[in-house]
Image 1 (cartoon, rainbow, N blue to C red):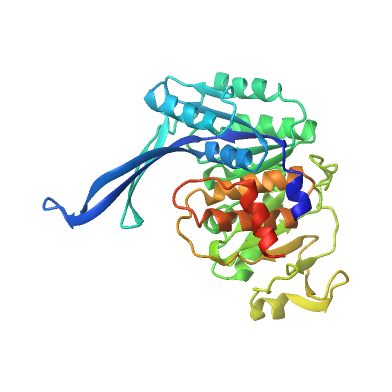
Image 2 (cartoon, helix red, strand yellow):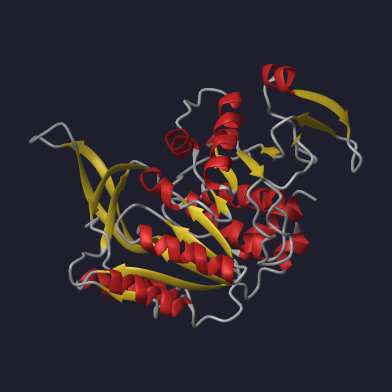
Length: 381
């Protein structure tokens, strides 16, 4: 893993999506309001941080990469704050455009008693107009040696059907990885991308399969692979990640194998991760798998017939959780960095799983740093 991390430096990754300005109000709570049964928060501190797609770019920057951020802000005072905070993270702002018909998206969280008490959202979710889409694409085409494009879709209006069609076409024509952090309402737009990364709730909505067990996750993942013709990673919170790999993505940096109408044949294995305890239920294993000795290490691989898919389960990294906000942004940023360096999908997911573990140990939206990820694997040596 450390060899992959060493290659993170200066990877060029474009991030396109909904830009959000996260505001945190920290306060002290001593009493309940006489006006209503709610706590009174005495404000002690306020801070602004980049959120949404801007947080994805922030994570790429702190992991040593070169992010190129694309998004929309309103013509208001919060635009200036977001641009300033983004620039402070060494993220170029030339791909951020002002839309007079939009407001800068803001999420204000009130923190007291060491927990979030309230969130207030300001947003206009109307879709951007065609001329804004053209600005994104023209600016994107100016970037040389781009490794990956990450679409951070929060369904706030930046990602449109036409924009997705053009991004998919551009990424295929130029052998660029296209990684999607999806929203179910836009599921039909993602067909043909490299990788989709829904959480369990999103996977359930997008597949139409109620997820109540590991078996359901396997079924949902297979359904999503067939629907999108792409690799899929389902993030399942405390249950870790489930990786569904078609074998169509070449392991060479930024290169996809030739598209075919059928999934590329490969060994139908359900793998445990080397050195990790297998967390798959006995019932699932008995129904679907047979054990055979691993050829690469002393652990055992678990075989599962899944129509030419390589499926891996990655257990979560155990640690105390303080705040999950922004963890998805950290995951997709780390996946983008690792895959750009030529990592296998499973290895990229392992790195992203550890990165998420670092993030949830921090309060509020916050990126992780390259040194933290390196230290994570040095401590586990």
